[in-house]
Length: 264
Image 1 (cartoon, one colour):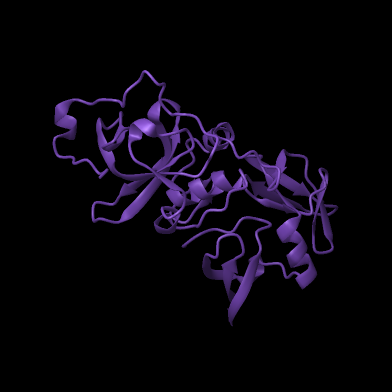
Image 2: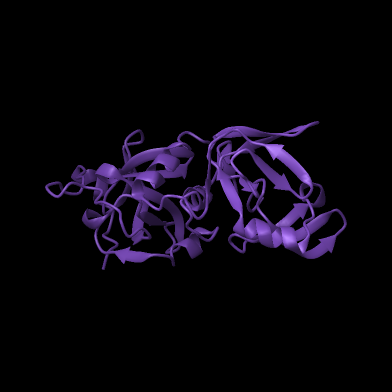
């Protein structure tokens, strides 16, 4: 599995093979093979309308109710043509009673980013996952920012090209994206900066750890697990992750003796 599509996300079909369709996700351009039985065909007019008039479910787990069936949804699912009570998929109408936000009205603030990110705490790690029952690092970051109305690529190697670089961890703001080296010179991990220079990220599970200029320090393992490569800022109205009188967290010398600073 390379990624997951959530309910209501639209795709374009590029190739047909037996019971499979090679699909490109409209939100981020990510592509892969999908079982045709998990797709619902749309008219061109519906496809265009959903791109403009859709909301996002904020409920961790909620259901769509129809007259004769029920569809379970997870947070981040799209609600096509949602009017506050019902959404529409083709000619089918569903009732939705959970919290939702439209893409155009989603708060683009650090506080909102942190609020949404914390909803995923302890979700298990799953390569390619994009749900609270299994999610990977880049999928976690992408969905959190999607619920703030901000479009990010699916892959961490493309996400790192977004935003404005932050020179030092002491200058990090809440909501910044911290990217980490895989040990071979490639960006392989990403997390979201929280207050007090913590970071929330998907590693084994969605968890909160300490962040400094060396990387992520796991207090349970008492070691650095990820080397910091670069911090990028996407929000214009965020607040510093550290109070003005604070400094970056310090570790015992033996914990960092084999590390090198990654900021030029």
